[in-house]
Image 1 (tube, rainbow, N blue to C red):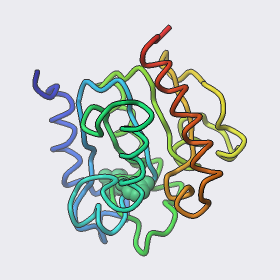
Image 2 (image 1 turned 45 degrees about the vertical axis):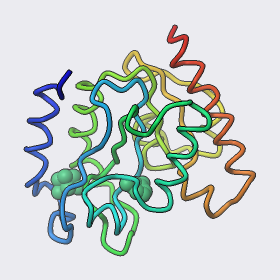
Image 3 (image 1 turned 120 degrees about the vertical axis):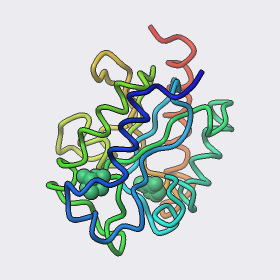
Image 4 (image 1 turned 135 degrees about the vertical axis):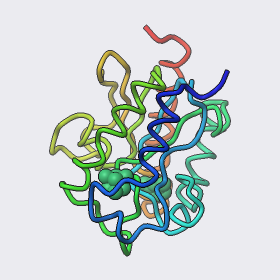
Length: 189
Ligand code: URA
Ligand code: SF4
């Protein structure tokens, strides 16, 4: 099965997007990666330096940890999932994405979710979780429960960068969240 036309069209459209100032400093747009029919859709914050150079999301240190959790806790490979970010272009110096950049980029993420139609959406960290749950509440409070988003399951968890900084305690919480993700994938209702 090929990539749905709508996803292909979207990627081509995004490749020369100029809808926010991040277009000026990016090397390339990092649209998304993985299976266009994935059951699990991970949403990060924005590309880092490596991702900006390679054009693929989550391939640096955070990506390695995400990949490990996907394999160990879900029994899947990263290519079985779909991975994208809240903003598709790297914020300079890895600064936080600004509200106007997040807003400008949001239609791509929503269209990706529609095209892929995952069973479970997994926002990683504050930016993705706050955006999709439309809240100011932080990830530490949000995580640990399952939510609904446009008729799909949504399971927020920490960004892998937080586990790289925060160590085993954060990683253990992430593993707990991944156990619930697996349950939802296997028994969607
Ligand atoms: N962190 C993110 O949020 N996204 C990436 O693609 C890489 C690191
Ligand atoms: Fe377009 Fe999103 Fe890149 Fe901004 S971050 S230029 S909205 S693709």
